[in-house]
Amino acid sequence: MRKTLIILVVLALVGIGLWGYFGGFERVTAARIESALIERGVPQPVAACMGTRLSERLTIGQLRELERLRVREKEAGLPTSTIEFLERLRTVEDAEVIEVVGSSAAICAFSRG
Image (cartoon, rainbow, N blue to C red; front, side):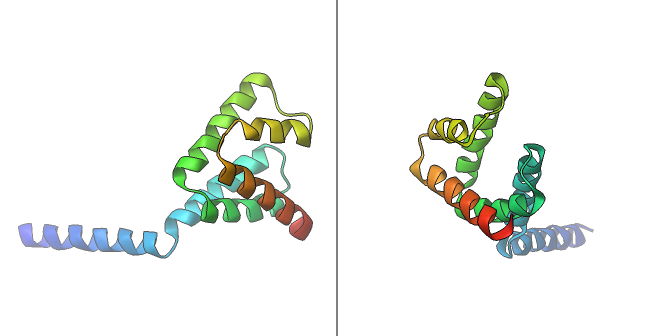
């Protein structure tokens, strides 16, 4: 019985490792980003494109920083213009996040929107 349990645990760990190695985490993250963008009014094709790009280029910590931006937005209301959105994005204080979000929005809007 103990040997069977150990084998099952090892197989489960190997399976989770393979899932993560072959992009399982990025797909889940991309889907969450896409959903959040759609809730904000971004068209689905653009949101899907941005979700994939952001999940591939940003770390989990950077994505969490963007989540905190969302909380601040909710408190102050939604941005009414692109300029206001970019001003709020600058509060993240991470140049890579600003670059990735800005370039992804532009690329995805022109190629898919």
